[in-house]
Image (tube, rainbow, N blue to C red; front, side, top):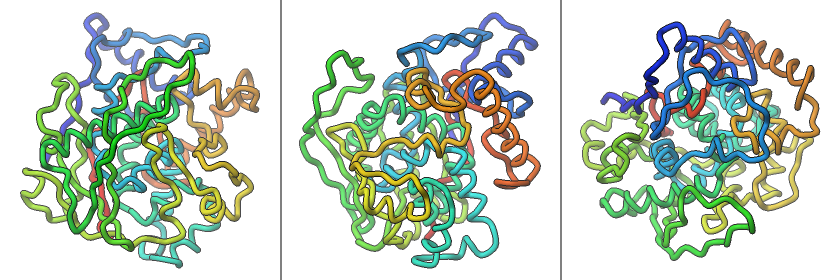
Amino acid sequence: MPSHRPPRFRGDGPGPAEARRAAFVALALAFGGVAGLSGGMPRALAQGTPPAAAPTPRPVATSGQQDRLTQAQLEQMLAPIALYPDDLLMQMLMASTYPLEVVQAKRWLGQGQNGSLRGDALAQALSPQSWDPSVKSLVPFPDVLTMMNDQLEWTQQVGDAVLAQQDDVMNAVQVLRGRAQASGALQSGPQQTVTVTQNVTTPPAAGAAAPAVAPPPQVITIAPTQPDTVYVPAYDPNVVYGSWPYPASPPAYYPPPVGWGLGSALLTGMAFAGGAAIVGSLWGWGSANWGGGDINVNASRYNQINANRASNISGNTWRHDSTHRQGVAYRNDEVRNRYQQNRPGAGGADRAGARDQFRGRVDQAQRGEGIGGRGGPGDRGGIGDRGGPGDRGGVGDRG
């Protein structure tokens, strides 16, 4: 089944040369000024007004309003994963803020016998790796990890939205689930248990920006029916959500791998292939705080996964750890200020050095050295201004 590619921006004025220069500038800005990357103009999330033909660097602002996504853009981006089980979805949202580590984990999974490891043996093999626990926790779901690696533009977009608009991301997921339930596609069954409760929201802080997505009246949770197995659903967002309310922003769609053998099941709703056995030490430490718009973590469990690393946590609310960002630029000014202010590499020559270091990592990936043989964030083009979902690859897990 072909994937549905969201429309790109199309400017009216610039010719081919100007368009090429605009694409290069957007790509360089997305990765903190890295030059010489291939991949062309990134795909765009649809929105009402096209961006300027030739974006130029601007001063870092104190507000991230100019980079905020609309409800239509958020739903378009989150449609492929909004119906995943809660705990798996939270792991994906956290891991998406560390896109280079996602690439590294995918490369590791393809080395030697790593892909055949299960249970405690897999957990032990992952222990020496320096990745964030959220990234390690996705390794037992190889098709999910593969999709995030193959759709790296989309993965970084999701992560940027989580960092800049976490409450909007959580609300958008609930809006999408409500539509899927209303259409009859989202139901309890042998693979998943769907529960509906009233939404109790936390009032916004004084002076906070109005949400892009209003909290829906109900919270829909999705949990594995079997305590030791997780089934990752496959579905076509153009089907399960009923009539899509944003014709100019069709949902992103990444079909499942051909080997799933689902036949025509996706024409009518959700389908499931083989389940993935839960790796106890890597599962269940992060959960959704739907009413509060954030992610709860079990600090003790997190630190056990992180046992050989120095950056342990003490609170029970997830906080992005910028040390795992590994040079990938932050797209939102407010987020950039939050995580790079008063840190080495936040400006001047230090920032230029960080860009050069990241360029070296990307070059290594493109040559098949270092973190992997199919390239890092640079090889498909970066996230330009409002870059959009890609169009290839499948999701899920074959177990």
